[in-house]
Length: 209
Image 1 (cartoon, helix red, strand yellow):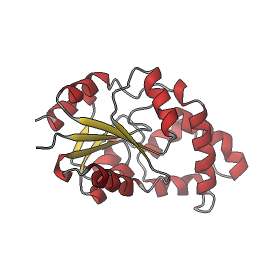
Image 2 (image 1 turned 45 degrees about the vertical axis):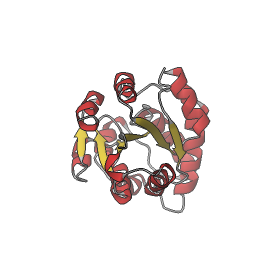
Image 3 (image 1 turned 90 degrees about the vertical axis):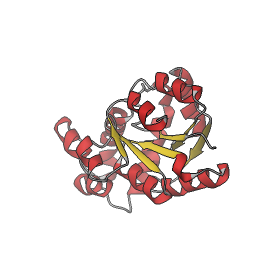
Image 4 (image 1 turned 135 degrees about the vertical axis):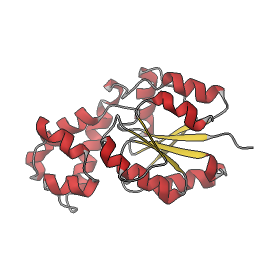
């Protein structure tokens, strides 16, 4: 019988990239002609869907790929200096001890993600898959299932954004939303994930029960 396979999103779920993303976006705002993100805007934006955020900031779909490309370049240039969003190490060790495979889906460069993990003593992951498009994670999840010949009922996708929940549902696997990342708890709850957690320790009862 297949042991559970747990797939993590990276930005926000594992690495605390929110503050860095805001700083980078504000630095790019003049170049691309969109609004800056002020401290008082952050919590409101955490409650919005991706397209609502783009509308609020005034980023057109035409400009979006260029903004994403520059933002990713900046994030990747100092990814090893980022800090973890939460303490995942105890639960990662527990999952591995119980025979689970754990992996990462990310839009970042795999080598840089591994640098971050090594710098933060999180070298626990078995596989990495890279999604080139921010809205293409469902295809990557489906590819993982096909490549690894997995039973969908034993696969969990953990993410911090509404688009992560959408991707997991499209791929036909269980979704675990975390409240410590980009989208806030209310926004995540509206998408009806299979589970919504506030602490990584809650994963034990979900995955290993």
